[in-house]
Amino acid sequence: MIFVVMFYAGNILIGKGMNELPPFTIAFFRLLVAFILLLPIGLLAAWRDRKRFWIYKTPFLIMTLTGITFFNTFIYGALQFTSASNVAVLETAIPVMTVILSALLLKEKLRSIQWFGISLSFLGALSVVLQGGIFELSAMNWNIGDAIMIGAIICWAFYSILVKQYMNLFHPFGSLLVMTGISVLILFPFVIVEWSIIGIPSFELPSHLIGTLYLGIFPSFIALVFYNRAVDFLSASRASVFLNFLPIFTMVGAYFWLNETITLYQVFGSLIVIFGVTLTTYFSKSSEESKENIKEEKQIIE
Image (cartoon, rainbow, N blue to C red; front, side, top):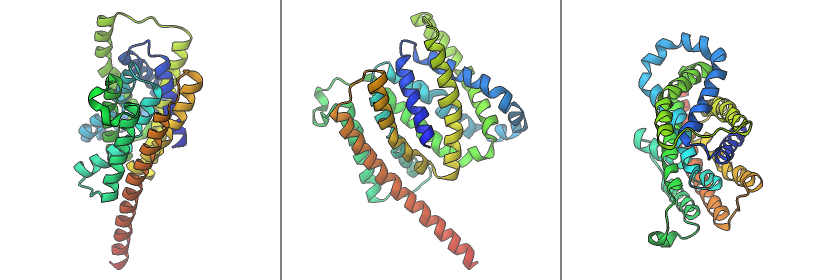
C-alpha cells in the first residue's frame, strides 16, 4: 500500500502539472495507455472470464465506472481549480466515506467513537478547504475544485466496497483490461464534446507524453493491481487507511516540483483528518476482527 500511495501522489502531482490539458482528455489518454499495456497481458484471462463478467455485469460495471472511468476524471477536473495539496487532503476522506457507505449499504453498525472520527475528519478537511475559516462559511469564496473532489471521494468509496466483495472472482489483469477498455469507450464521446467546446488542446512533447505514460502505467495499472490485492487481503477500510500518507507525499512533492506553498492550515487540517480517519477505521477493524473471532469460535464448537 505504500507504493500505491506513492503512485497516487504522483498521479495528483503530474495531473496538476498537466492541467493545461482538459480533464477528460487526460483521463482518456491515461486509460488508453493502460489498455494497450494490459492487452497482451490480460487478453487470454479476460476471454476465459467472459461468462463471469456477464453474470456479475452490474457490480462489475459499477466498479468500472466508479474506480476506473470517473474517479480520476473528477481528480483531474478538481486540479483545474484547486491545489495538488488540497486534492490529497480531501482524498484522505475516502476511508471515512467507505465506512459510512458500508454502514448504509452493508448495514454495518458504527460505534460512537467512529462517528466522532468521521466528524473530526470532516472538520479537518473543511479546515483545509476553507483555510481555517470554518466559522466563516458564508463569507468564503468556495473553490469549485474542492467541490468536484466530492465526486471522486464517493466514487472510490463505492469502488472499495465492491472490490472486496467481487474482485476476487476475476483475474486481476483480465478484469483491469476489460475495465479500461470499457472506460476508454465511455470517455471517448466526452473527449469529442470537450474538444468541440474548447478546441483541440496543444500537446507538448516530450512532457505530456512522459506524463501520460506515467499516469497510464503506474496509477492506472500497477497501483490498481496492488490496491485490489491489498483490499483482498485486508478490508476496504483497512487498506484505505494508508491513504492517510497521501497528503504527506503530495505536499512534499508539490512544494519541490510545483512550487506550491504548504500552509499551516493544510498541515493542521491534514493531522486532524488523519487522526479522525484512524479512529474511524481502527474501530471498524476491531469490530471486523471480533466478528471473525466469533465465527471461528462457533466453528470450533460445532
